[in-house]
Amino acid sequence: MIRKQKKTEETYSTFSGILRTLQPGLLEQLAFGTDDEQVLISGFQNNFDRSINLLYELHLQKNVEKKLQELQIPKQRKSEIVADIFGRMRSGVLERDLTDSKSEEDFDAMLTNLEERWSALDANGKVFFQWFNSKKRNEFLNSVISPVRQRAGLGCPPERFTTNCSEQTN
Image 1 (cartoon, rainbow, N blue to C red):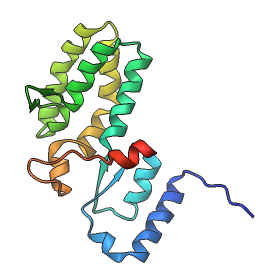
Image 2 (image 1 turned 90 degrees about the horizontal axis):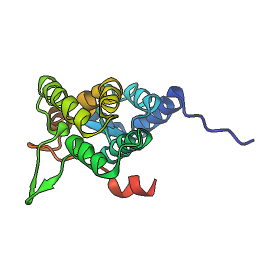
Image 3 (image 1 turned 120 degrees about the horizontal axis):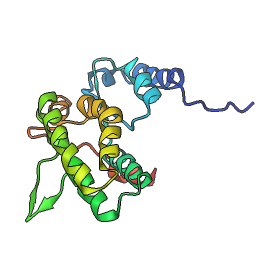
Image 4 (image 1 turned 45 degrees about the vertical axis):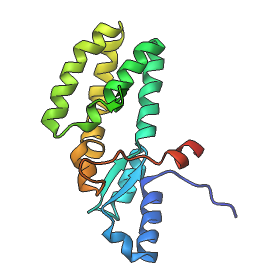
């Protein structure tokens, strides 16, 4: 009999519970990484409740780019918005961006400043801002910004959390 796989919190919780049982040392892990699928996150948090959930930056960026494309924001303006969120190199220096926010207050102040910028960049910039603020703000605060990555052991200043090779394959 072939069992159909289900992407449910119960399935992911069972899977992560088996991992924890087979490898008890995993309980000492500071963090685990996922995409933004809520049932996956919840399933792992059931068994790794002391670990921080980090979100894959490449996956987040693709979601942002997909939304910008849905809103028909032109390529150059889309690149500007993505850089405001995930950074850009200028003259060999990585500029500070939303992911580098030092606190919730810092993130919110930066995001508030971006509302005007994105609205001026494109007619749908305000719509994108509203989507980002309602759908992505909490994800960034809980699983992306600088202090979260530091608590997960990614250094000071913390490295970006990415699994680009495996994510690109996926």
